[in-house]
Amino acid sequence: GVGKTTLAKLVYDDAKVKQHFELRLWASVSTSGGFHKIDITEQILRSANPTYPASIHSEPTLDMLQFHLSQLVASKRFLLVLDDIREESFTSMACQEILSPLSSAEKGSRILVTTTTASVPAMLGASCTYHLNVLDIEDLWSLLKKYAFHGGPTHDSTQELEEIGRNIASKLKGLPLAAKMLGGLLGATKSTKTWMNVLDKELYGDSILPVLELSYSYLPRRLKQCFSFCSLFPRNYKFNKRVLIQLWMAQGFVQSQNSADKNMEDLAEDYFEELLSRSFFDVRREACETHYVMHD
Image 1 (cartoon, helix red, strand yellow):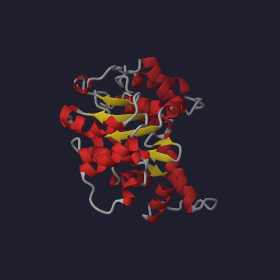
Image 2: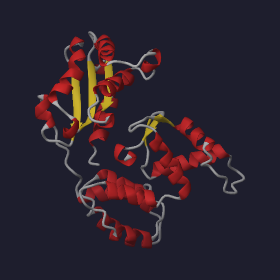
Image 3: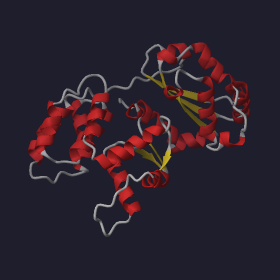
Image 4: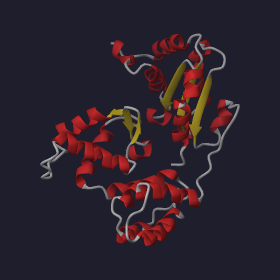
C-alpha cells in the first residue's frame, strides 16, 4: 500500500529505461506460492514474450525454462524486476538458482527488487537500497481529495466534507493506496453521512485490508459480481479491457437498467469505468490489473 510496485512500474515503463535496456523482464514473486522457481522463471519469460508457453507442449521443467532464459538474455542488457519478495518464501540459494541463467547477459544489466522485508537486500547482496516513506497528511489528503472530488469540488457541503476528509486522511498511516480507495468510495456518494460513517470506522491500523473490504462493501451488487469474477484469474493477471467486458456480458453480469440509449457493451463499459474510478483497477496502455492485496 505504500507504492513500491507503482514506483517500480514507473521505472520499468520509463522511456529512457526502455532505450537503455534491450530487454525488460518482470516477475511478481509473491504470486508464485512460496518462491516457486518454475513459476517465477515462466513469468520472466512471458514478460519478454507473452505467447511464450504456447509453443511448449510438455510440462516445462526448470532446466528447460532456464535454458530458454539463458538464450533469451545472451549478450543482451536487461532490466529484471522481482516484485514483492517476502522473507517467508525466500532463500538466497533459491534466488541464485533462478538468476543463474542470467550470467549470459551483457554487462550493465540490472535487477530491481521490491520487498517489505529488511533482510532481503542483504541476502541478495544489493548494491543500493531505497526506503519509501509514507505520505505526510497533506499529501495524503491531496490524493484522497483528487479521487473524491475528481479534480474539483462542486458539492454545496464542500467545506464540511473537506474537514471530514482531512480527519480521514490523518488516520490512514500515510498509505497512498488507502487514500485512493477511500477517495473513490467517498466521491461516489458525496454524502456527509457516508463520509462520517467512514471516519467512524476502525480502519486505520497498519494493514490496508480493512480499507479494501470497506470499499468493496460499498460497491453496488452489479459491480461486486464483476470484480469478484476477476478473482478467478491469478494475481497480477493482466486483463484486456475489451475481453474482460465481453466475459462479464457472457456471464450475465450486465443487466439493462431501462437505458434505451445504451447497449449492453456500453453498460459494461460504464461498469468498468466505475470500478476504475474507485481504484479497483490499475490501467496501463491496453492492459488492466488488480492490486495483489485486492485479489486476497
